[in-house]
Amino acid sequence: MCGIVGYVGKNKAQDFLISGLKRLEYRGYDSAGIVTLDNDGKATLVRAKGKITNLEDKLKNNKKDDKIGIGHTRWATHGEPSEKNAHPHQVDKLFLVHNGIIENYKELKAELNEYDFKSDTDSEVLAALINSFYGDGKYPLTNAVVQALKLVKGTYGIAVVSELNPNEIVVARSGSPLVIGIGHDETLIASDASALLGHTKRAIYLNDGEVATVTANNIEIKTLNAEPVSAKVEKIETNLAAIQKGGYAHFLLKEIMEQPESLTETLRGRVNIEDGVVHLGGPGIPETELRRIKHIVIVGCGTAYHAGLLASYYIEQFTPEITVETVIASEYRYRQAYIPEDSVALIVSQSGETADTLACLREIKKRGVRTVGIVNAIGSTIAREVDGGTYVHVGPEISVASTKAFTSQVIAMVMFGLTIAQAKGVKNAIIRPYVTEISKLPEAIKEVLNEAEGTVRKIVKKYVSYDHGIYLGRDVAYPTAMEGALKLKEIAYVDANAYAFGELKHGPLALIDDRFFELALLPEGELYDKAVSNVQEVLARGGHIIAVTNVDKFDLSVESIIKINSEIKIFAPLLMNLVSQLFAYYMTVEKGYNVDQPRNLAKSVTVE
Ligand code: G6P
Image (tube, rainbow, N blue to C red; front, side, top):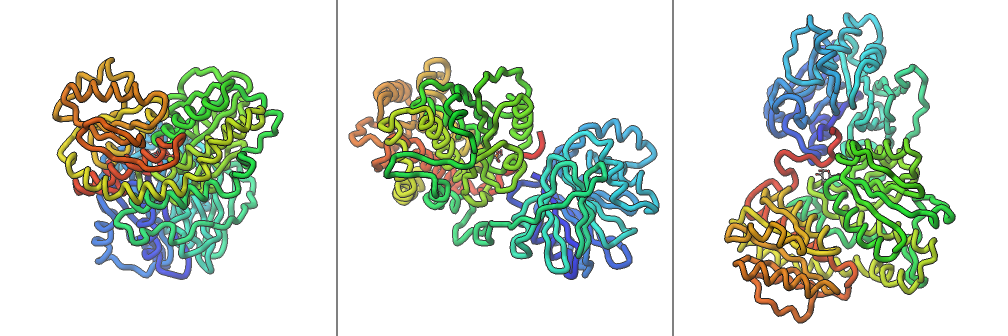
């Protein structure tokens, strides 16, 4: 979603602001803008609707050597994407960029009735509010920011500069991330550490309720209650290569193809093949407590939710005395759900910043339930607020559609389930096959990707003209079908839905006609024959079936077959999901859409 950058130091601010905003492009946005100040405080404000290249075009006539500035990519919430709604917002001599939502902006706006608002945004209201305390700059800007924020309800990450003091940036956060990068005679601001790479590896992650006054050589952090904060300087672990395409046409293809390596990172030091056990240190739950766990609630959104759903099927297989409930965070946060005693909550999030997931985490913690994060982004808000956690370590995921994170989230959660099963004394004979397959998965993924890529690429051509797809599966293949359908609608804009095979007769069969194709996931196993009968029912009604299967003697006469050749059986659905990922990718390429930044979507959904 929206991105923030800021610069104060010895170099040209415009250069960092533009390169930083480009790094944040992947988060999704629809307009962009920057403001810089010269030594006398004179501002140059440039904003443009659409891509950053539009902003760059406008900047050609506004090149400045200014050494301080802030910038923003906006993902519209209040007010359409347009230049007037783009940030930075100017109120008199003050400029503000804002991520998040000011929930009480209407009330605040009514009180600021003397001010002539120029945009439709809640952010401009915040700028006007800060300015009402700042006025002619008699008091420090930081004080004005603090006064204003005390009146605000909602979420924010902000950066503010003023023509009256062209040496400092004031930043603050509550619910929307902000990182301060420490350079040599320069300080950089970003809503995501990836924007800082190549400039500095030393960073301070601001906490909720903190305000920082930043100059080229100084960072002073306080709470909103004026208590000084001694901030921890952390090392940014990501390297530049991890956020570049590395020869691939798109980040999405790169991220699909790097799953053998990303899953290896998830497993590193956590699997003991000889003893057939896993070891997860992160959750930090004592064995006595693990033994008592009776219920797991898994919370996530989008792909993370599907990962949780799939993991829940597996966890139930080897720990029979446990119930596992996977919930959509945006729903769960408002449900009056009862969480039984001896529960643990898994909070699943690639970015670690998703607003609804974070809200659930906070609510669940309030009820005294232990929380465990299954997170990718190191140092993210969810990672910092959970009681313990397991990083999936897949490296930066840049493409909006999540791929490599899914595979690792499923396995990380399965490993958490195995940790409980081990503590509860489940026989090693039951656990070992899971552990063995997990250890073999990276290699199997590599083989399947190599084999399937060409086949999928060819098959896709037959289905490019279809606007409707039905994904089918049952048992572990059902959540996998849901994830496959999500990928297709997210990036190829094909109306794709997933159904459990058993549900076909209860409605979806009525849809079958020449406008639809059906992608059927058919893993070997107890329910295979039943799934085949369902496929026959679709065929009998003229369906256009694409079968994805690992069954050797697959003899159904369907329109297309994608064969998975692998010794992996338990986790075959994860291999089938690679096919769905490639299918969505090549469909999107064929249709000529923007693979990495699909319309209307954002990578990290930091507003409700
Ligand atoms: C957005 C992204 C999805 C992602 C979901 C949850 O919708 O586009 O790819 O699955 O958010 O994100 P999280 O970072 O919490 O996993």
